[in-house]
Length: 499
Image 1 (cartoon, helix red, strand yellow):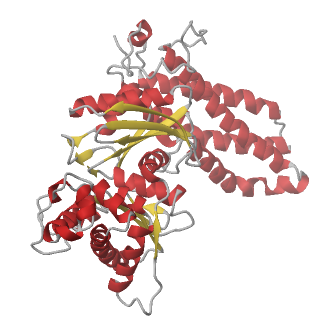
Image 2: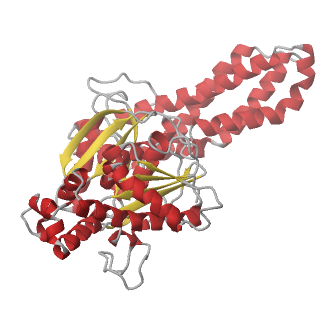
Image 3: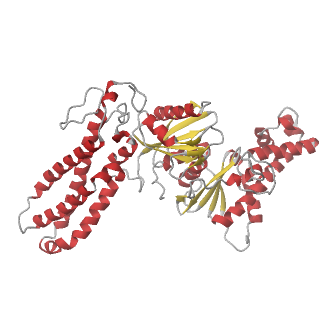
């Protein structure tokens, strides 16, 4: 029988754990640890230690009442907050003691730390048993090749109640509060048309290792390939979570791909499917959102609280960061800027609508502009045509870039046409969001000022009240094609959106 990571092994078939028994064992261990640690204070009637014992008991009772949610998903952050609240409520009880013993709050702080240590000790003990499939009361030694330090053990498979969402249990065991975010190494996954790249990323946005696999042709095989890329990248690293950037509509819970244009995903439970395969907590983000977040945190957007990112590639995408938060919208599908209708009854878009922004400001649009100009005045496009097969239809994006760098008038004019539409769209977005900066990324941004300068001019031309209002900066993205991977990894550390 294979475990949740697909590995074969007898230990996997034995790892059947009852959720109630597991929680009860944790509670019993916690109670024993608390009793042992409280004994060191040696309470005597009427003494400061006696008053402190009462306070410790109050904290203990509060924690005991929260056992089930704590072991479910709250994590250490919630425990710390609970201790703080109870200590504040009990402050009046020990005020007289403080007057007689100024050091009492030093003891109080120690008591809180001891309680937290007791909680972690109890839960970690049960996690050790859980990974071995051992539900006995004793602490049986690890067998060879077993134990919580080996990734091969993984969470228990099958239909056990505790393993229905093993990554959520791992959040709690690691002290990770999904309402507050956390730190640690995470893996970002970028799903490309020809390859899937996974990379280990630290808290500063540095990529420590990468692993790439070819992109398969079927949706189910793509999920398996994502898992393979994650496993390849994580070797030698202690990973706490995975972020996946997926092209398409992703729900606000960061779990399901509603619709993907280039993959046969419809209501695809990508989070659950990948978690089953890798045994790590997973979040799913729209790929443009992931790239926007990467640029905001570690690239061109550093230092800004309110930025709008657009990606000018084959199509046009984007992301919204307002008040240092990624804004996904109520259903999670905001910032589909490429499908804003710029021209009523305009060019037909692949989405089925007409006049979408990406039909006028994207890599496809640039090629169309160049071909139209070369067809209309071939005598002015001799150099550009010579880079292809000599026909307007043979002109590709790389030819336009090369010709523009050589000063070719037709190529430069094609870029200016694209920039005119891009800048006009940014002016509309400024009216909606009023950001301090626009970050322009995607493959076309690699052309630098050749693209950015005319975009800025067009933006100012179409910005309402430009002569009297502050003007947002238009900045080049800095992370290049790494933005999506880095952003997805960092978003795996971010708290779940408030519903």
